[in-house]
Image 1 (tube, rainbow, N blue to C red):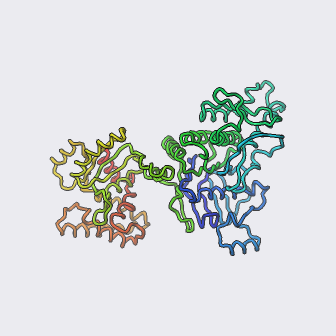
Image 2: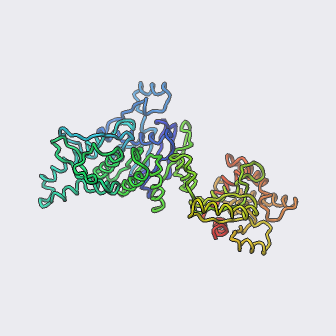
Image 3: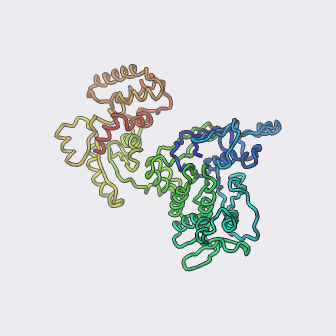
Length: 550
């Protein structure tokens, strides 16, 4: 089951939420953001949707105090009227299955498999064996995401039951050895656990009629009982064993784990996520809610290894008392820096780029004709996706870029030896000999006068008109641009000085296209509206890329 979009209204934290644009190739979906931003509420929505299939096709078990985000009087009226707030306000669309909505008639029991954040079973000590439901019944599923989620003892009894069946069932060949049976039942969990903990070996289940428990070899110690494992070892074992068992039946499923990193240190978190990712069946998606540095580091690595396979949904900065539309976040260095800051606070500043490009623009943030770090912010927006490990830094005018970058290059390389340093300046009115001298010094020069020449190029203005659904306005835009440039020339500026004419053109663009929330100043408009339009398929992007990265 691969989710494409999610819609809900009046559920948990969400007044109205739409998540859209999850690609079919996505195998891992990470919900990121600080505590209290609504990540677990989304898993509660999935858990709620699967209830009818888990209870014989009956109605939803709605708890108005828990599930519903409506005013108390409205909830009371719905209860008295016998209404069930559910599918009519929920729609989950899949790439490969009919949607869940008010018209849904049949729900597959394996649609969702959910682990809550309250996973802790300190000891396994089986006093008796009992009959278990089929795997797909998932009878030990927590009713809500705040309920205890104890699956270890349940999985113990499943292994014992399968062991007995392996001995007496006609379906199992008589020639099967004890080792073969053991490998079939616990082999995948044992291999995953050993990769996480090289000194920990999963032995098996011992005698189920003598206070049965799981046994391990730990270093030189044999027959080490489950209760003696550390909290982190238990947490990892729980998830790995559960996945190894449940993925035998849940083969077309959205798996959801709330905070899989609980009790586990950051390096181990990274390896645990990779194990879970690898054993997730091909037709399934794995969704996790996390703010773990280890999980995020591994998600970044998996994303780079298989582009498109990892989706990140950023819950930070949204007011869920209002209508919110969420799309997969742009995965670039700025995103990772913000995401890591949730997990490691001020240490996020140590997330070093692989390359630093010094460019023109004041380092201080000021208001006026040219705000601080204007060039750097434009470059970071333009190249952030293709070059996520490159950081642009403004150093002032061209002479300051030349002088100060030499000092900073030495400092950078003493702190981060692997970082490479480049420099780029505006072309302005430099002569051919000046351009040659800069090239000899290793300083790159834009092929146009300045960054505004790229931002206000006709190609980008055509994209702007198309982006707001007004392509017919381009002739008016060209006329306004010519008028603004002519006015700039009359003031004594060069014929290609787009910077001087840009404030007037910015005002005209807002008027002609009736733009709103596009940036309250020319600088903000360039950074937030025009720079994102310079994308790899445009000539301006290719030209700028050659200028900056040679």
